[in-house]
Image 1 (cartoon, rainbow, N blue to C red):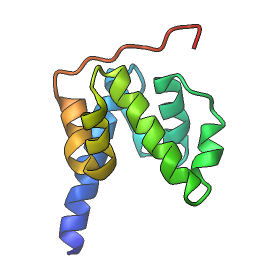
Image 2: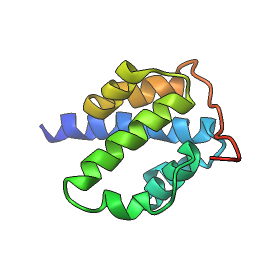
Image 3: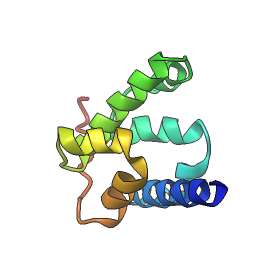
Length: 110
């Protein structure tokens, strides 16, 4: 079981690393706890204080789901893809990172 868990973790981290690189950030930023959430808010064009909300039990789940929807949107993906990112991140983050999806930066007014 431990080996399976490590493989799943490796798939998610590799996918996030590539997603961050596609968004113009450094890949290593994806593996630093809490800081990666801050960078994710920058990537999706949302306020930094969502990081604080993500640390609150239950609220954090909703915030992470919201950020997944926004991230999928930035890469031109729809709601079904975002749902996949929430429930099967070990499949959908690598698809986003290693696939053909292109990042579209947030507008300055957001």
